[in-house]
Length: 242
Ligand code: 6GU
Image (cartoon, rainbow, N blue to C red; front, side, top):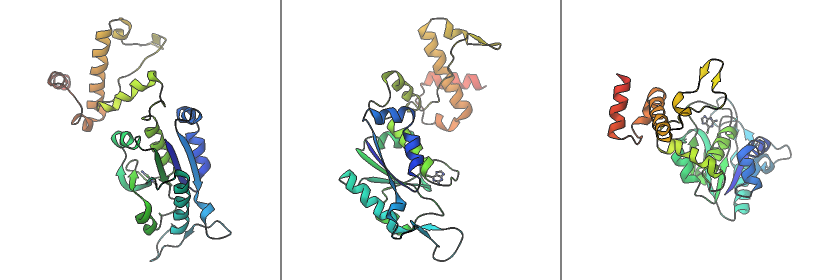
C-alpha cells in the first residue's frame, strides 16, 4: 500500500511512520510513504502558503493553489487521483471499521492542515473523505494522519507477524482486551491471577473472555450494544453487576 502525505512538516511524518512496526513494513516494501511539502508549491519566492481570511476573523487560511499543486504531484506519483483524506475535527470520527476498509486501497493520500483551516474551494475539488480522530482540537493534521496510517497499516497483510495478528481480533469482536501479565509471579506484593499459572487452557480462555466483558462494561459500556455476547454471557454480566 502506498501512502502520500501533503503537509508543511514532512519530517514529522517520515520520522513517525519510519519508526517501529510501520518502519519495518516500509523496509520490507509492504507499505511505502511519500511526503509532499505543500510549501514547495507556493507561488512565490518566500514559500508563503497562507493569507488572511475573507470576511475577517482570527488566524490565517491555507490557500487553495499550493494544496492543489501538491495533490497534482501526488496524482502524478500514484498514476491516478487517489482517495484523499482531509484531517479535520469537523470530519467523521475514525474507527476500526474505517481502518479495515481503507486498508483495501492500493494508494491513500492525506492532507494535513494548519492555521485556521484550508480554503474551502480546494477541499470541495479534491477531498474524498473528511476524518477526525476524536472530539478534541489539535494544532494540525500531522498527528491524526500518523494515527490513521498506523491503524490502517496494521490491517495490511504482512505488516504484523502471525503472532501479533491475533491481537487485532481484540477490537473486532467489539470488546476491550483482557489484562496481561509476565514474570515475576509476585511483583512487589502483587500476585499474577492464579488461573493463568494453572496450565488449564480452557479456564484461561474463559477467564480472559470474562475479563474482556467486565472491562468493557466498566470503561466502555457504549461498546456493549454492538459486542457479540451470547445470552449466557449477558446473563452472567447481569449477575456480576448486581
Ligand atoms: Cl483530524 N485535526 C485536528 N486539527 N484536530 C483534531 C483532529 C484532526 N481530530 C481530532 N482533533
